[in-house]
Length: 118
Image 1: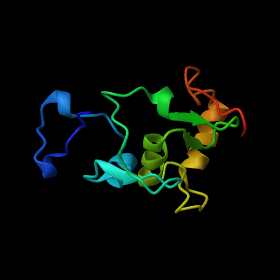
Image 2: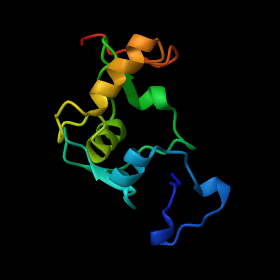
Image 3: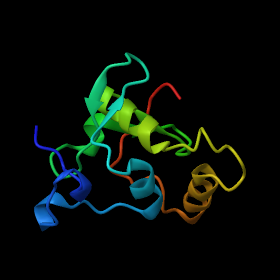
Image 4: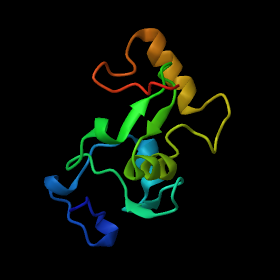
């Protein structure tokens, strides 16, 4: 599968090679195109929003606070981007922001799947 290749790894700046990302995720991704699946330790390509479906790889806990990777790609992407701020558990974490979004009725997106066992 073709993946978005960062310019630092000879990728282009053509629109087809770019993906919209927040500053936080862009910093944590850096120029990585692969990551380790924490469940299997396999090295897999991280999620490609231009080629893959979000709902096939991710879902939210029932309270909407944590993102769960449901496939090797999803788990590796969550780990690489530290999507739940597991490495930075202070009160300024992304989980705090998600709580604000939930209270405002903005999160999680109604089209996103919810993990049934959370």
